[in-house]
Amino acid sequence: MSRPIRTLAAVAAALALVSACNSASENGTGTGKPGQSGSGTTRGVTADSIKVGGIVSMTTSSGYSKKDTDLGAKARYLRANAEGGVNGRKIDYLGAEDDGQDPGKNNAAARKLVQQDKVFAVAPMSSTTFSGADFLEQEKVPTFGWGTLPSFCGPKYIYGFNGCLVPSPGGTINQTWPEGIATVLGGARGKSVAVIANDSDAGKFGIRTFQQGFASAGFTVSYAKASVPATAVPSDWSAYVKDIMAGNDGKAPDAVVSVMQTPSNIGLFTALKRAGYQGVLSDPTDYDPGLLAKEATKQALDGVHVLLQFEPFESTDPKMTQFKADIKAAAGGKDVPLNMHMLTGYMSADLFLSIAQKAGKDLTVESFQAAAQNFSDTGTLVGDRSLPKGQKDSFGCGALVVLKNGSYQVSVPFKCHEPIPFK
Image (cartoon, rainbow, N blue to C red):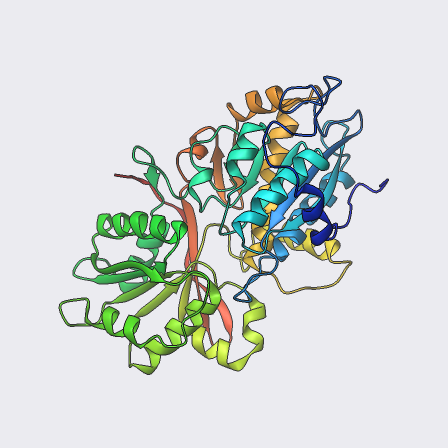
C-alpha cells in the first residue's frame, strides 16, 4: 500500500498464510542473514520508509482487551511521520496482529510479521503471552512492549518501554507499588499485605517479585499466591476471600494487591467488599475511564488504588498534553476516553523511534543495536530511560491513582524510587 499507515489485515487470513511456516530457518528472507533480505538489504528498510508491525491481545476469552494499544502506537507513528519521519524515512506501520491471548497465535503472528510482512521491528507487543519471543530474538527483530514478561528481561533485541519488570536474580525490582501503598497507609511498619495473581507464568513471576518488594519496604506479606485460573474468571470467590482474610494470623491484611486483569479484579474486589473488608485494594490494570460506564463495575472498583508506571493522565506535564493531542488526531479528531493500553502502545513506539533516530541515516539492525547500547534520555512519560540497563532493570518510576466518586484522582504523585536487588 502507498499510505504510511496501513490497516490491520484479517487475522484468519494471516494465520492461514503462516500455518506452513514451522521452522525458523524458513524465514522468508531468501539467502540473507536474519535482519536482511536475500539481496543483502536490511529487512523492512527502504530509502524512504521503515516497516513496523505489532502484536496485541485485542480479543480474549475473558473479554479483556488491549486493543487500544494499537491506537496508541498509531498515534505516535502518525506524529513522527508528520514531523518528517526518522532521519528522512516515514514509518510504515502495518497495525497490530491479534493474538487472542493465545500462545500459538502469538508465535504465528511473530512469524507472519517477519516472514511475510518483513518488518524491521515489532512495536508494540502487548499480551500476557509471548511465545514468539524466541523467534523474534533469533531473527534479530527489535521488539518493544510492556516489560511484564520474562522475555523482556535479558534478550538482546527485546525491550520494555519502561524497562524490565520481571528480572532474573541479579537484576532489580521496581519499588513504586510497595512505596506507594506505604504512602497511602501512612507507613509500612506493622502493616500487612496480601498479594494474589493468576496461575500463569506472568502471575508466578509477579508473586515472586512483589513478595520481595513489599517485604523490603517493611510490610509483612501475609498471603502470596498465584492461584486464580488464568483462562476463566471464577464464579465463586469465597475460597480466595476466606484465605486472604485469615492470612494475617487470622486477621484481614491492611492491603490486598491483585496482580490480575480487570474481570478477575472486579470479581475479587466485589467479593472482598461483600465480606466486609475495609483495607486498601490495589491493582495494576484498572486505569480506564471506559470501565466507569457500568454502575456495577464502577462500584467494584471504587476506592481501588491503581499502579501506574507512567505520568497519570491528570498530569499537567507538557508531554502528557502532547500525548492527548496525538491520540485525538489518531482517533480522527474525536475525544476518546484515555486508557493505559494507549500509553503502552504510544511509549513502545516512542522508545523504538528514539533509538532509530539515534541510529542515524544508515539504519541496519547492527546500527540500531549499537545505538540502543548507548541510549539514554530524561523526562519522558515513564521517567528517565537508559539502555542496556533497561533490559535488566526497570526505570523505577510510577504513581498511584484512586477511583473516587466516579473519577480517578492521583493518590501518590509520579515519582522515581531506588530499585532493590532481586534475589
